[in-house]
Image 1: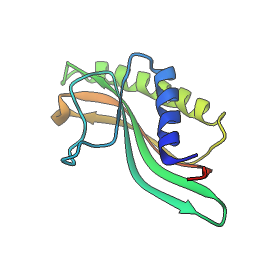
Image 2 (image 1 turned 180 degrees about the horizontal axis):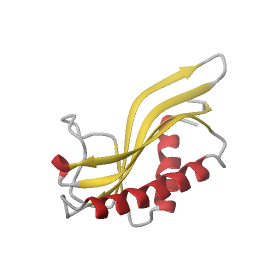
Image 3 (image 1 turned 135 degrees about the vertical axis):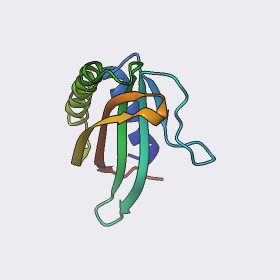
Image 4 (image 1 turned 90 degrees about the horizontal axis):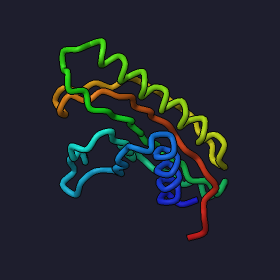
Length: 136
């Protein structure tokens, strides 16, 4: 599986668990985050990709965020509900991903809240995804 095939798998599964989400992969050419004002948003950010030729595997380290707009910036109760919903989406995504022919490791899940990005609440998953490498 190539990196782009991994991205496509993540896109399909994340939209399956959150069909109303807008999927965004990576960053803009200028390096800025691809926040575009559409929510709910599914943001995939790649960090590193490494290839093990001996094992014929490819490992991608990435972060996947399920982000929802939170209009009430000072409403902690509403924010907690949104973060809870995003946590459910993350759990469903990981369950679906584990049924595929990939190895998911080093999973870290954490709530996300960023008032500077237009008041957004959600959940971020950081993980390594290892798959058998496709022939190039």
